[in-house]
Length: 480
Ligand SMILES: Cc1cc2nc3c(=O)[nH]c(=O)nc-3n(C[C@H](O)[C@H](O)[C@H](O)COP(=O)(O)OP(=O)(O)OC[C@H]3O[C@@H](n4cnc5c(N)ncnc54)[C@H](O)[C@@H]3O)c2cc1C
Image (cartoon, rainbow, N blue to C red):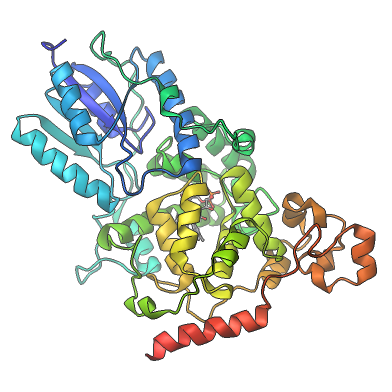
């Protein structure tokens, strides 16, 4: 099989054909191109169950799209370095191209692989394409990493004009004939016994085309009201692009240019457009933080938080995970997560705050649960946001900001639409009790069929007492 020139394009979190710098560059060289995906389960942060479900669909779609261009996806499983060595041996490839990843473990791994390949005369080319700005590019005037979002965002909007996205190649030279890989089904990425993914299937379509369609729908129907509706979990007020972005089915830069185009043509008001792009800026900021503070997934950025007296309460953690806290907005969010692999951002904050503050359980336990259950699980976004809620991170919420789940529910889900969607047992309650069913008179509960600690739990903690306990625990480390 060796003889003709061959380039391996190692695809990781860039499962798309358009605006894919590594694939684009390889397609220009006139060599055979081997699009490769490696399932490397030695990764310390290998995908959780919901992400594996997504990955299956994404790989299936990518293979379909590659075939339409005359190519196909090669799947191999195992530690990346020997898998690449093997494939180089089989194909005689003289170069490996990839788009850079910024997770600390991936950077370590890629450095070692690059050195070893280059020592043997194999060319390695690493491209940027996943973020609005490469996480290592922007630094503050003093040459240090940004720790606060607003100046980062200002620098991004002033210094960076994301280059226009690359077009998909019109055709791709196929991999060498006879080259084989694993069948996708052999990887068992999707659950079968039990099959818990019905809600995921009903909610999502995976792949590059699905991502582009979602962006189109967002721009047509949702984006104009993004600024006002983005905090309302009962409405369809956000893009739902996060899992597509996570697997690179669409790039931040593609989203940026489509949105800017709509703003410039007047189809999208500037206020709504910038409010949305700012969130993409948060995505870039999280990646920047993880790049500069690589121990963030394990360690508090503010080391004083190492002294927090977290409670090791497995029962309380399990009740939170099972959506049995007795606080409707929290339980609705955790049910949405379990059913769809996604949760509205506002509710993520409330749910996380409840775990960290009202239950005084270490944020890492919550981050781990999210890692396993989110289809958009992203090491930078997940870690930075959990640390933000806990108060231990960069630009974090102050320790005394403790979201009250009743007030948050009443403010952001005023008619209880979101709670009723996910907790139909409470559906008959009048709006004024929907976020605090324990305050409803017995007659109302009876009429609406709500049995506290029967078909819906009574609150698992008293909010006031739990708040005091949290404040005392956090005050102790600030003063210590
Ligand atoms: C505790 C907690 C954990 C989180 N874990 C993740 C995670 O694992 N993966 C993830 O992608 N997001 C995470 N987020 C951020 C945010 O909740 C999601 O990105 C957002 O809800 C995705 O929905 P959307 O695509 O409709 O967002 P939109 O409002 O449409 O925003 C567009 C895009 O901007 C980015 N974005 C939006 N908000 C944030 C944010 N706060 N931080 C970083 N990027 C953001 C996302 O890529 C998102 O797709 C977390 C937030 C919290 C509070």
